[in-house]
Image (cartoon, rainbow over all chains, first blue to last red; front, side, top):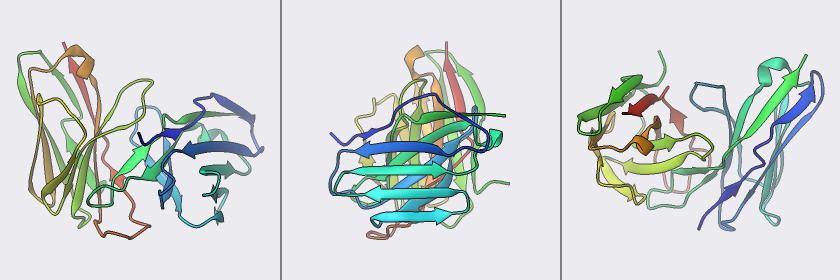
Length: 113
Length: 116
């Protein structure tokens, strides 16, 4: 059973702090990992993806991947109230087309001003 | 205008009704998906179409019937649904290239379905 696990939260951080969101996955053969942000009542939107071990930075966001530990994380620096949302971790599912994503339940982040 | 559009945005239907959800993507993608999002549960992959061929059906009840007439359009036909089928149904698309790690899935705004 392929699974993606996330702590549902809520994770509360003050404005300007670093928010750290974590995700583990069960399929050791997974190759690609994605972070989506979903505001209440809206559809998920992609923040970034990563497929190599190590860190990948994009603005205030850094994704970290450790395939040996089957662990992927998202760091948000200088957190803003507008970052308050649910963050979904997703892993590429190796179906016939090799394209679908399997999602975790998401972690709710609350940034207080 | 978003790259993936869904209609209707909201739908209320009785358990004996037949209705359809429609999705259209304007991104030139050749893979399309239906996901279901219920409260307190992860996004559930329902169906995958690649190059207009259904390549995955995740044990979805037959009261949900997908249709993909071409690479830009995807439908979800609904028949004799149950109240527990009430959820947000999300359509998504991506480029289907086996082995390409960066292919991203883009979501539509979703169709909120309430079964009464």
